[in-house]
Amino acid sequence: MPKFSRESDREKRLRKMLLRSKEDIRARIVEELGEKMAEDIDSTLGPALDEGDLSTLELGRDVDYWLLNMLTDNLKNVEHALERMEEGTYGTCDECGLEIGEKRLKAMPFARYCVDCQREKERLTHTDRGRGWMERRAGVEHGQTEDDELP
Image (cartoon, rainbow, N blue to C red; front, side, top):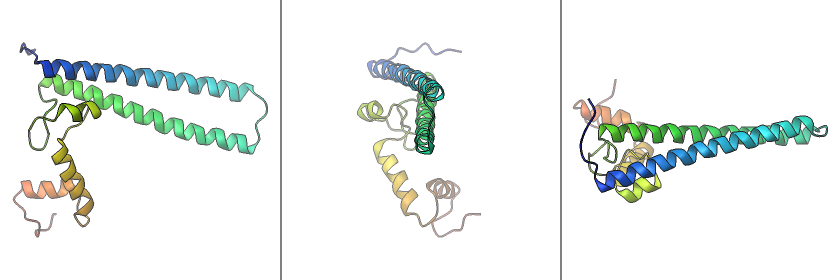
């Protein structure tokens, strides 16, 4: 059953920002794909390529693949953020439940953690002597202490 709640000004701004971001990413993907197709046609129809040219072309394709993967991931993240907006959970921290600042959401529209929780998550990930943040969190949620061994 759809929600019929009145959208706040903040929600309207954030929805508009997410939709704009989604369109920008889509346009960038289309642009990148178009450029790559044109480059492939040029390289196929162009003069004979030596080993150096082929190596450079291959490196460029690797970078292009990485860039397209990154853009595709960003698009999926923005679409997921729009789904969370429909559910009413967008813009709140998955960890502490507090509102994520608009400034952070503008910088990273698909942020799932507030600055403090993200910082703590990264700190624990890098300093927890081999235990990942998620493993530690899972242990704490199940009543284990830091000294207890995880299964």
